[in-house]
Length: 335
Image 1 (spheres, rainbow, N blue to C red):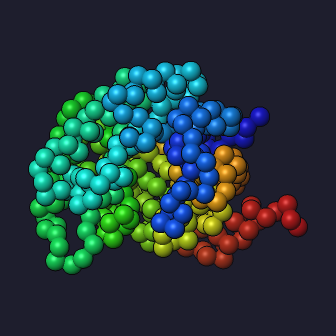
Image 2 (cartoon, helix red, strand yellow; image 1 turned 60 degrees about the vertical axis):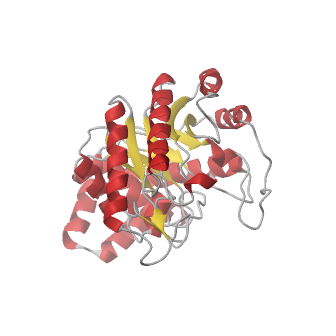
């Protein structure tokens, strides 16, 4: 029987690309084999604890393929959790999508989002994730910060108004592919979300992106829940803090991951944990299975913590008490 991770329940999904081929600028052909959407879904289904999937627009689903892909998902038994429109992997977006100088490109980003919202609703999905990675800049004096943020805000608001039954969730990231992103951290993203003021607009907290931004993911989750209940979605992975390595979840920052899992439980988050790992040289399926085990193991540690003890440590800011508590919970079977 699968271990219970969070008191509020656990639902695991996977971004389908995690189970396929992975390229970088040195290995353009990739380190693994290319797979069709049907093959990726079959790999996801083969992992019993995965019950949902995320799709990336143009990679996995288009307006033309939506019906066929929807049938594949239905046949697989998985739940469509999110669609991520492709504003980042086509040449036309090289100078921005929602923030592009060309008004036609901005309108195209809005149209693409609305189309994916309609598809998401038709296929029983819950969220359209806005990861606008090309909306940013590379050099000083090359952008009008106010104008381009205004364009982003206006475009996302128009998408929110398109239909209220689909959630839009902005996934922030400090950099890459642009060297600096407008949606770079929890606070600035939350400011825009609250300024737009749409009930169906929130934030996706990617654990690795938060680390890249020198945030504490647990604190970022608390901020997003505290100021408007805007923590809509969670991506789990790990990295070394300076790049979006998308390593196996929990293996590099186990204590921070444990605290994060403790706090999302404490905050009452009850939606999906989507794995967004890119194990370039490893098999994606093996890495996903291992990532689930790490999240469940660290979640079990988080769930075993005594709230009164944690409250006392937080009240006194007792670093030694924290270290003892975590050591005993994590490593008690070793001694």
